[in-house]
Amino acid sequence: MNGIHDMGGMQCMGPIVREENEPRFHEEWEGRVFGMFFTNFAEGHFNVDMFRHAIERMGPAEYLETSYYEHWLHVYETVLVERGILTSAEIEEKIASLREAGES
Amino acid sequence: MAHDHAHNAPPSDTAMRVKALETLLAEKGLLDSAAIDALVETYETRIGPRNGAKVVARAWTDPDYKKRLLEDGSAAIAELGFSGVQGEDMIVVENTDEVHNLVTCTLCSCYPWPTLGLPPIWYKSAPFRARSVIDPRGVLEEFGVELSDDVEVRVWDSNAELRYLVLPQQPTGTEGMGEDALAALVTRDSMIGTALVEAPAD
Amino acid sequence: MPTLTPEMVPGLVAGGASCRMDVDVAPKFKVGDTVRARDINPVAHTRLPRYIRGRTGRITRDHGVFSFPDTSAVSGTHSDPQHVYSVRFEGSELWGADANANACVYIDLFDDYLDSA
Image: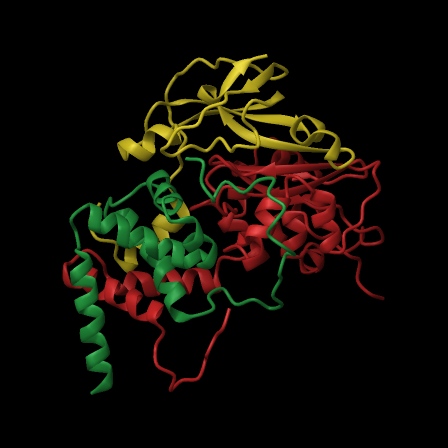
């Protein structure tokens, strides 16, 4: 796919930003998303090529504006819904119920 | 990126989505959260660039090992116990007076996890992925590495399932140092190719 | 595979999941051959980046036989085994007169990405 992920040779992206003493995970959720690669892979939901292609199918603006682990999260939601493991409604309902529980 | 580490801050939308996904999959019996705990702990504490530094220091002190490393990176790295996910098929490329190597992944962010850990933000960033292949000398200058035009710059685009580790040049004056002391000099960036290894300050 | 448990984590992390395939497939090319990357534009997955397509390089190493990502992204399993080569492209071949001095790219290309040149 001739997508935004295919970046070799582009010159419009600005300077390379580095971070001193970068932690392995910047937020706790990044670690959970990282781990879910292994659990979902072990469940047979995707192989590495399907995983990469699901990232490539993101819209270009969203791809550029989101982080590495947000790309991974996008894969899980996309592939699990496509496989019929989850529905988008289920995810939204669970978010709502977790928020409610957190406020109580 | 904005980060709020205050403990009383409400979880971000992304954090909530992740929590929802993990909870749903666990409820369906498709995920054991303790496995994710174990994976996070593994990659936070046991897998990182100190592993690669040991490989480099061994190569600097043991010519036979260096020969094996350059001929069959996967097997030689396995001798030190650093095999596994995203390091299954390893190629080690050697920096010399004539050649400087730089590793990238223009299509995603492929990186040798067992020897270097998880990739830093800059390696995953669009500017690095985009420019590493068209202007490697410019990228290297941004990192403070200035090479004469006599030195050939080889960029390794990790687009397939081979993963690349740079064997940096040993700094002059460190020939008598032991393996552990040498390993302490070896930085993550020197094994990606965006830094040179410096001799100890004194 | 059953649901991943903490006990299974060390074995999975250390064992990995190589895409190498233990299949006897003849290579189409050998080290030293000059090759041209095909100008393909599939709408699905490929690991042949645009900046390489149509360019001419030289094979420097045969990595052996691997699963072909363009196929396995669809099949979901290791598929279409073929040789992967390290191919060297000179900077001037990729970027013309705007290339850096004395720079080149090595990239790993499957048999199905290449023609003789």
